[in-house]
Image (tube, rainbow over all chains, first blue to last red; front, side):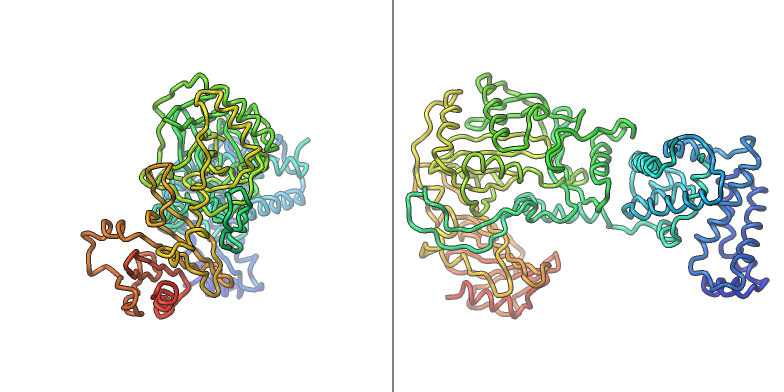
Length: 186
Length: 452
């Protein structure tokens, strides 16, 4: 079933929507969740939660235009919430690697206390990525949205791992400068 | 805010970008296409990076060579350089790496460039150790700390001396300052330290282009020397096309990103070399004289006598020559002359210029309405043509005597443009038309410009 048909099902609130969405995107969503959590059982739960949440969110609304980014956002958020709840007890190797990398981009260590700040941060990141050249956008998104490994990114983009690392490093530096300029430091 | 917050916030990225990032990279995009294009156009690009856009040309008046040239020409700062194309070279550890790189527009364009160079030269460099820009001038000239060329090396090669200036020490904000740098560096000529072992890495998979930063500096420097108008560029591509008459002094300034060569010729002319293109500028002799005198005191004795030869190599002078003049056609309608090159060989500096020895002429015309449209006319002397065509595959040739040309002899060339070659008793003329003329129009152009 194509995206348009699935989106209409979700919009109509049909119970079949969840099954169809799972058939098309379940594997990819599971992969995203597994990369973050490192736990297949937890990942399965994250995917189920994400599908249900999407069904609730989109019911009665205009059919969504891009399903994977929307679903991916939901499952990522759910997985990250589970990780927060679990504390530092259980973190996948991928997550550890990603958070170590992203510490480069942080001006200081703290936490977002208000939902408003979380939205603002999201907007900031969106703006930052929008301004990147296309190739860098792809590298950044594949690393920090899809959680691809450096090797996977390099291979699919036909370049070397060192180049990918270099690009990511510079982008994290750029992101940190942006965050500092926007007052995310103390 | 912590790392997880950041990771969560990444989820807000536009869905369109997320989808696009997942698409497989297309083959032959980006660098691969650039490399293919650069192989095909390497010489033309090298000569054309600083191409002069000609507003109009007029026949030169007779004179003693000291009058201003009638050729009105401008040298726009980035003429011939596509947007976001970076070219030049960087030296590291005794080697020069030629670069040709197409970088998309970005706020961090310098960072992009540095990252690319670092990756190419020292692929194992940790990202945090990437070099920084130094010796900045107007955002164009740059050198890289940690990649700077060797300090003050003189390489004698007959009349040619290359001077590598530690230009971090010099202020290039004005031509006067640059001149001081030249004078200062020339003191080292006395030592004439020979340095060998420099090589150029130019495998095609390692070529980048960095932006043409030598031109603004060259113009400043030449303005300080009282330079007059620019003339058409002369391509010095191969050794046997070298212009060897009347050369007095030849210097190359290594600016880190590019060589700026200054050749002082007889007749008050100086040539500015940038990559492989040689341009003649008429100098104010009064301004040059002290410079020459200073250099003479170094190690090369008295300058040669002055002559008119260099003036006679310009197209407007050759156009009057009965036998060869017709090969400098008027600009086709709807186009403007963008670039012209002459390759000339003369063995002795004392011989007068013989237009019959002009080996190659190219003229490129750019469409006025459609800038993608281009016509390139290449004229080769008969002698050179014969040697080139010996053994050529007759089935693939698109040539005939000019009077026999028609649309059927116009072929599609390998690069997707139309091509035809016509002969007369003195030369062969090839017309390439990119995104512009039909075969019928090309044949008509050939007849109009070069027919009897």
